[in-house]
Image (cartoon, rainbow, N blue to C red; front, side):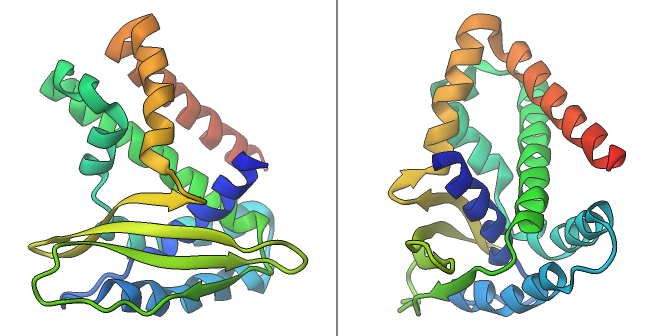
Length: 207
């Protein structure tokens, strides 16, 4: 049940991006892209694989520029981040990014009837680190709270964590990453993430 909520919420993380040269308020950013994403999800045209490709293309164009994957990976790695070499750090960011992107795409193809409620944000001019509050409302089920930690960067607001039902996404991964590193080192974690990503690509191509 927890993993199901994570899949839902990870999919909705995609709504946090919009490629725009202007500095867009975080809550406006989420709301502006939501309609585009949900339109594709609800079309139900083509095969599941074709729909996944459409969503993945949208993620690449609209979402990725608005996530700070380096910061997310640093938080997920915890104290082990500084034990990794620059080459390992680069590989970890790339694999972690690919893993999350594939998870988003899969999640979007699973849920069609959810509604997103975004709480308006009171943003001060001096704010540099904020939380955007939202809920996923699914017919016949309890709402799931999905809150976005965002930081103001020179090129706009970036998502660096998602808190789902009071559980931090990066903290959740931190325990998993630590366990793998303790058993097989940083290279072992890179190999594990790479294998997971390759497996997801293979399964997507087989559909």
